Image 1 (cartoon, rainbow, N blue to C red):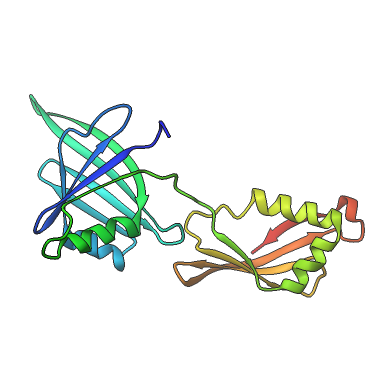
Image 2: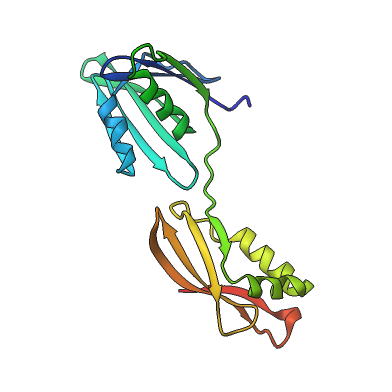
Length: 206
């Protein structure tokens, strides 16, 4: 809890102002982001916005339902020198946009605040070959090897889902990655040396 950052937003007619408060520091000033820039996140994965003294990179993670906000506040120190303060936070995208849309209505809210969340980098693992999965789970040795491999692999930050499908080899699967609803990498999750289950091991092939 102590590592989480408080993100505060205030609504104006054309802009949303953001401030951050962490254990280290409070943001130097309010950062103004145009409503139109926030709306771009509905169709664009990354949006770069700027105000008069800084910029922010907005990265929407659709699988996790989060928005990463990388703020940089700049300050002219004089003598052609610029210093700054940087704060990276992750918040719930839907919660922020609900406020953004509601605040545009007459009599809508003007203030919003939320604590940052931990960004998940794990895609959903979906077994469409349920019969093959049950076959693996029924064998204690294969089950341990499969669970361990899935735990330690497929940590793909841009993947929304990894789908597993039937393969002609027992205890093996073909897989397909989905990135924001678009097919990505395809390959196989293969149990090698299955003639000797004790020494068998899983590996991916693409």
